[in-house]
Length: 283
Image (tube, rainbow, N blue to C red; front, side, top):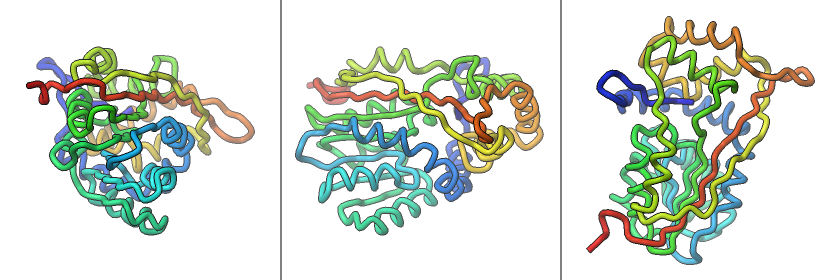
């Protein structure tokens, strides 16, 4: 849903400083509001994560740490190196790891694309709802491949480009109409380039679940205050987001059921294996 934008010169991501500021502001609300709603998706991804038996695990873009705790429970005593560019998210993740007694977890502040600068010969990389937020997903996957040893595993769950008739698609269309800028369709290119990064797709599946909210208005406000629309809000301002809100509410595609409002949500789950050399490792 959060999207790098484009102009006549091509894809143009928001200022990274603004993005970090946005997630610092959103961190605690994200943990309280979105984390419980996304947890079933994360649990599905953790169940699919199958790294080799030895070696550290890396979690770039760890957010408030839900996946880190789940991984520590699945792989007790395994070294887990978590990172996030947001200082507030790093603090929340550290607190979550302490509360869970996960003493093998180390949390640092750094961007997901910089993983190979601090981690090498990892057994696995796990990423939850980070890839679609990055300005260059292919560059990030290249760094994650470089951080892995041969035979290592990457599991990544992310929000794919939404269909035009979905709630997420309607939000994206409203943003495009209000700003004149759109999200590039990066997934086909990235999937095609994975072999050049030494990565092989073992699983590519859709995880479809219903996510409940009290109302469409609540959903939009939570996305602006504590979710992926926070960077959009800081970049474009309240007047533009209000136009987006009115536009989206006119045809939001949410479903009322039992006094709740449902967003049918579909994540994409990739499990990748490092079977060859990445472009920076060739001799």
